[in-house]
Length: 436
Image (tube, rainbow, N blue to C red):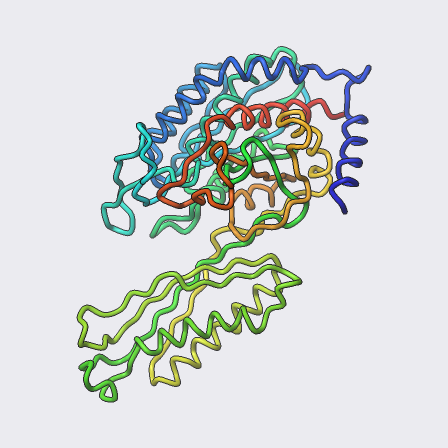
């Protein structure tokens, strides 16, 4: 389906969904004015959270800030849903449908290099080590925008029919070491989508892009993400006598090349994007000793379940064969960090004009290319229909292609886009509740 036809379908869907007389209960102008009023606080929240980042399942300060704000608005608030997750429930003056909005709260083990006056100097514990912590993925902005949306919507509850559920999720960046599940899966298990159960869920993510633009695609939008762990066991020997041991260093090099060849030479890149990267290799303690063990880890990004399963099967066999060639043994393990972000087709069509209300004409692309980054919002939208979209947040006048990417020490969010994100949240909730 082309972008033009998708927008046409969406416009028709919205026309059918309008209340009698074609008027919305809350106009875009009224929403814009309310968002303008809360924007200074959204900016302040973002800067405060940016200066005090916390790693996954350690977001205690962040969760307290969120919960205190939601309580001040008169919302029903549940805390410790999925360890540090927060759920806020806003009930309108009349019964109706239920819509959920989600933001993630965790930061990353990254040493910030933005030079911002509110840059992070925080540390945390990661893999048993003390590490610098920074909001290098923009979750500080996500939390601040959803807090702002909660304030705007709370001010309109007397005109609302239905319920809005605000989900502030921990550990989006994956389950910390020793934890079997990440934040979305654990929040679902502990009832974040129950009582009331949403009819739909929406979320957004800041990324490099033209400031204030929004984009997504129906069906597969963001890749499924698997963590791959490989351990090679050999026999230690002097670096001058490699034949007297089993060389896991040489075997590791062959494993990396084999993984690269599997995707480059056996997957058709025109049918579905696939990325298989070995990103860490830990082996050895001294320049002239070949160690007896090497540990590798990496990530697999896919958009097709059957293809992914086949690639995992073949990779396990190939790694075992490489190890056997050297006289070593291999352990091969895969754990999913996030499923495929699948945007509901009907909601994707309906959403386009709503986002244009928020961002402006020509600022929304409802047929964007798929992206190989991942998001555990996918687990939420497996439970209820949902749409996840991106918000361009590059600095003014900077080519997005040269903007520091998410997870970079220099990643930053253009604060001028924060009101766009708040409007998008508010209008998505309001327009969904207005649907018959």
